[in-house]
Image (cartoon, rainbow, N blue to C red; front, side, top):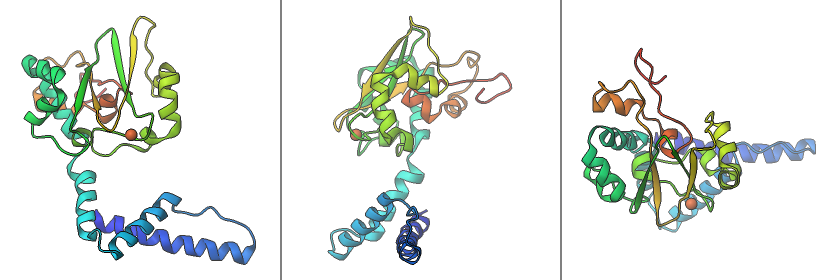
Length: 229
Ligand code: FE
């Protein structure tokens, strides 16, 4: 947890210094590991702490919360509830923010939630073309690919092509809708409930729901032997 992150940032500085010295020794460059962003984070954090603007312990607590306490399990519970409770699903689609808050999930980066429903004829996928806006309270922190330039640009240019790379192929008569997140509005996909799950409890259903299915780059699957197919 926080010690690992702290250790990582410390290592980032040491390795970069070593690499720089090594490059001078040999007259050739090695790729700096860890990455530039890690070093920038370290520099920025050191500066903010030095100026007394932030508290290291508070930062660690914040990162720990989003890495370990808040994550896609929250979103999965929302989805499972919608699958078993028709009136909850209605409220969820009408006012995502309020319905999600009913289950206790709210907060930063989730102030204005819109939930979009997948059906046999409509498939929704989420992107943030501008940066990496993502519904933190229900999905946690975004995966690396979500923040990558190719996903952000290609999702709007060629959504079916991107979905194919995730292993999803839709016939032409299924409409693919792409939702572009903003600083104001964050989206959550309500995936289709897989067949064969009629007898599963809400808790069991929640275990089937993956992060990717709620971003719209995967379907929720179920195998008769139990668990995801
Ligand atoms: Fe963004």
